[in-house]
Length: 166
Image (cartoon, rainbow, N blue to C red; front, side, top):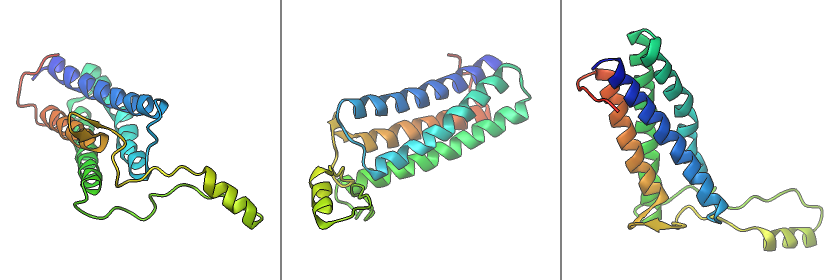
């Protein structure tokens, strides 16, 4: 695999990670409030975007050892992201219990009346209920699939076994 192949893989991972985060923000803007696990599922993407940018840079003009290292980090990030997405999807399907912190925020109150007003205004995004399903999968399920695909791409970039040109 030449520089073009590595460059294409790195660019694809960067595009996928950026589009995934942008998609999460779009769904949030459309009124699908993220739960606590949804917000945690974004963290690997926030970490992956700069590493994918580095991989693009290293593929274009850096040493191959740094490129392989960037792909290795990306593979690990997306493997962890896939596990988190799988866990969250399992919580949504009722296969196992989710974390207790899937509740709305409560702020410091001065009286019982303030507390009751706050309780009435809090909208809880539950971790065990999918806000939306697309082709039968929740966004957590799609995250798991996208993360597995991204980990696979990063692994291909790391081991340099194919001639993949985008």
